[in-house]
Image (cartoon, rainbow, N blue to C red; front, side, top):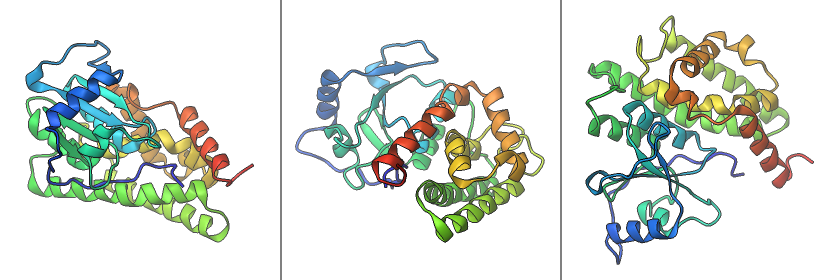
Length: 266
């Protein structure tokens, strides 16, 4: 069942028969590329070219888009056809062949958490995402990894399973969100007073909440009010979030389509 885009690992860059710059430039000549820079398209300088390979429903790609927006980084965007992946994607991520992939000056970086950390390190003059304190940094990474491994899989189960397995997933999903509420505590953001790395990692899942709520048969506001208040705060206060997340109804429609396609519902 391919409703979610699976996580993927970073890898040492491998060479192909053609230099990566040749592959990239050939690909850009063949495809329509959308430019993004705070809604103001610009032509990127050759010395700092940023390209994102992604698919619109991917929460992992949304992480990267939010991080780029927080830093004010212009980038070129290519929407991948996951049933017919581009040669650029296959060459850029030969291990897992998955999105998202960020290509910075011909160098591909894979796996969303690694990409966000890379963005934070390279463009470190604005909107720091990871905390400077080593313990706080390790803690943020732990919870980001937790959200990637747990929310991804359990949310997928909510949308695909039935019977006792579905009920177990429903309970586990709510328990996970309550753990995250405990980590949030009374802070406005997981990063404290400022929007940070863990916020970037978690907020994309909100775009799937209508589907999770509908198929999980629970109410987010009732079960996890602090988590929902945090999500709304992110959307209201951060244009990087509100301008990135797709409408919940569109994701819900996508899940409905996939359930019918795979015979889960009529």
